[in-house]
Length: 243
Length: 241
Image 1 (cartoon, each protein chain N blue to C red):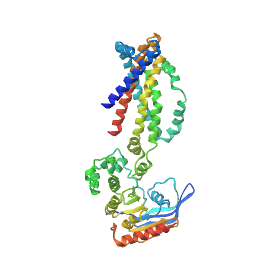
Image 2: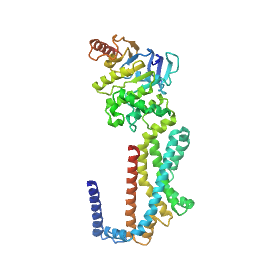
Image 3: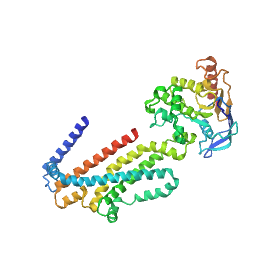
Image 4: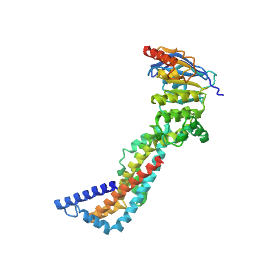
């Protein structure tokens, strides 16, 4: 309750500062509209914004889900097999040298203007953080546990699934938390490069028509969406290993 | 009832060319409690790890065997200084960990019986974070018992406990591990004086066999002969290089 009050207080303060900036500098509304105008637009255009927000949310959640599954699998493969490590790890690191943003036009070319090119962008942007956070955690199992398991004549696959994976879940969770914030970036970039739906598309459209208030309204919804996804992932992760 | 073999190790060990111990010869009699006492850094733990089949980083030049000639692999249980409990499993599941890791059916009933034996009947469903240091080390002892191996290697398992919990753990361990071949690495002269049927003092020069009092362990911590023997061990430790 006090936390909610505090957050509301901070938000109010930020909006007051925003309004003060607009009033004091006398900036025209097509450069920086005031919060009153933006929230007014947010309310009057709620159906339009909601329609596009659903598209972006779908892209983000699909990208996040697929990226999490792929990252989980890749990290396990890398941790379980020295061969996979020696072959795939350099490739993985090299792939990070290619800016993901630069791939957006190619993805749009391959996967079209629809949902999947954006899902692929979100997936690509989160794949590395998820994989590397989980992989690092898998390789840092306390040595005492591994030795105990060996003295108990445990099979390597059981050591992996019974000890290394559960011990590394907090690392996987921190990767997922990062991913929750990164995934919307991927989806928006994808929409900017080529889309007919989604908040990123709506922002470009509003910008082109000098509807800066609509642009800001979409931006606020995007920020709230990102916060919600992050909070959901955080809650899920807590349940994941605190059972 | 337990067919416990003697332990034999003779040779020298190095890590990356740096000598760790030896040459020395260690004999741990079958079914007896041998304490290996010495200051930090003389290679006690390395020696124990070799017997446990661990320590790939160690180059060991010599031989290492069970008295009956059969391999030690699969006949050894290890209890370390840290309890090594898995925080996401409760006490019962931690005790039954070995079966789980070998893909055998977990014997939850037997695990609970063993927990009763170490005095943790009321804590079977608790996770490690809800237990005290002494209770956690009891769970580790129960896990060691659950493995039911004839050879038990103890690597300073009580050194992190307070004096009272330590004395209780010593009594309990002496009771429940009786009949097995125990090799107990410790740097605590009092502990060796209470528990060892054979006490070896390890220094850079090798091993010195210091016969303990004739009484059966666990010896009372306040008995005259135990205290005198503890003093003698302490003297040897202080004079060792």
